[in-house]
Amino acid sequence: MDRALLEQMFRLAVAQAQPALAVRRHLPEAPVGRTVVIGAGKASAQMARAFEQAWPGPLTGLVVTRYGYAEPCERIEIVEAAHPVPDEAGFLAARRIMEAVSGLSPNDLVVALISGGGSALLPAPAPGLTLDDEQAVNRCLLASGAPISVMNLIRNQFSTIKGGRLAAHCAPAHVATLVVSDVPGDDPALVASGPTIPLAGSRALARKYANLYRLALPPHAQALLSGDDDLAPEPGDPVFARNSVRTIA
Image 1: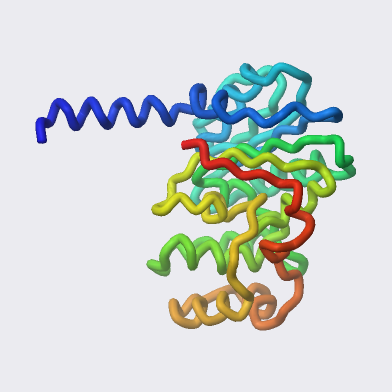
Image 2: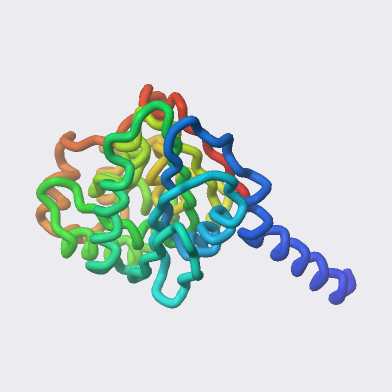
């Protein structure tokens, strides 16, 4: 095939995936109550800028992106943090995001702008774990050679925000998740470890994979993985009944 034609097709595909276009095409219905925008990922600041420019009503929000990836926004606060190993800035941003979606009503809307890289940008260690533990888990997984589906199933076990837990925290508000995918197959639950989308897979399966890939997990993480405390909500949990998910690019 002609090289010029291939390059033209590539450029057109990239242009259609730009947040300025993709977000505008997938705006959720405006709520009766508040609109709170949250997000994480390397494209989240671009998505936030596109969303606030297209949204007709009032909103507040906070998204976290990688250092050097911020975009100027007027109503949505942009925070930068470390990727691929999380840092204190991401830890504090994750805590603030959880606070921003606390105490919402059924009339409120949470818009979650999710893109690749969000796993590292939203560190929120499970009870009994520290940020150091989550950093150690991340390093183990990055060096393991495991596919992204396995990595996410395992790291979801050690978080209070991943694996749909953030969406559960938003209930009873409606959560509209807009996803820019960077994973093969475009399963939205695998992008950024699915903070608003539950990932099918049990704690027992996560233990099996941890053994298969011989992960040298920190002691507190190993102890959590060996039991059944702090499990993520299942995909069929009623807390997800009013949620919508769209892979927009």
